[in-house]
Image 1 (cartoon, rainbow, N blue to C red):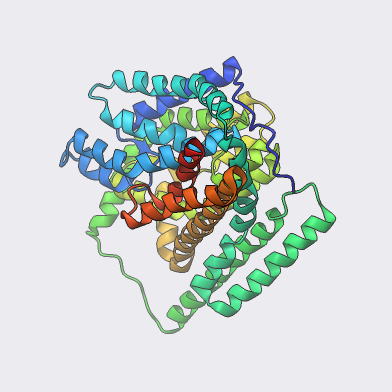
Image 2 (cartoon, helix red, strand yellow):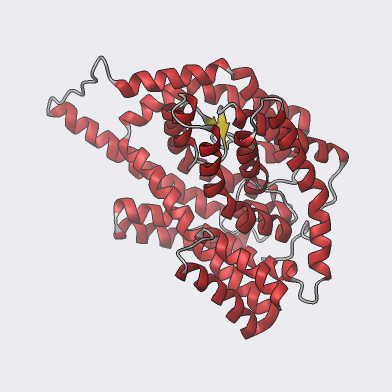
Length: 430
């Protein structure tokens, strides 16, 4: 499969694309200021104390910056520069910070819009400067696409192995590899991992649902009745959080419309693998990849939203794959708004369903962990391939050395972002 990226040469945004990015960044900063939603899943649990007045805006902003800065500069910016496609780490993590930082409600959208303008007008300049350096590290970073796309295919296999043991994991691995080979032979223009990922995720969900159904049958046969206390504090917290989010339903519908329109414009990818697929013009495959990721994040986003009263900027991320496939921005706006409306209104119901399906809930944890494991290896391997393309053994020495130095220092740059950041620094050094 070709690793040449169609969009990797520059950022030639149309006026409509520029205005969409700026408006969406303004909106997401405003929503973050009101503590209604943030993109960083790690920040969301801290928002309950802020909403209830137990912590300050500045303290919450400091948490957001600490958890987000490494991803913005180490992953978001390098990924955008190497693919020519925008991503949520570059757009929405900074608007989390700017929105929470803003002391006034009216200032938040101005700061967010300003960041959107920096992105759409500044990236092309940064791209041109990087390509004009004696060592073109951006072209070298396109080497990352093959390991990211192919290793990412294995995340369902890892999840099955962790949850259901080595035997079932080995069976899933054999099935996936066979499907990858079959796809490469029969459908060479299709992303080779698409069918394998679909089957892997379905196998995981099937095993989890079957386990839960067996357990419920066994409990009924044994006469076990689950009792929920009438004064359950978690239940009251969940219902209050869901009610808070429903009050702002029109605002969430505007947010859903905006994110879906941005995805429809094909200048935005929701994940690492997706960014490379969007850059290659493989929109159907990108939609598949982001759709499978949804299963790993619905339980996390639903439970943290119900516990904290703050939703995700991209919701359950279903608007990404839907947006890629929409034929025009107007339809994308309508469908994105409806998807967000359904998600927000269904939050309480989803929370109750997840409470009754513990194995499915566990599967999402294993999926997220597996996605992280596969991407960490793929990004590290791809970064070393980029280093080799830039400067052979010396490039590997510098980039690998910077990565190891970061590990030895206790990871001041988060592990996922350390290798791409090292490629940029290594390229400048070379």
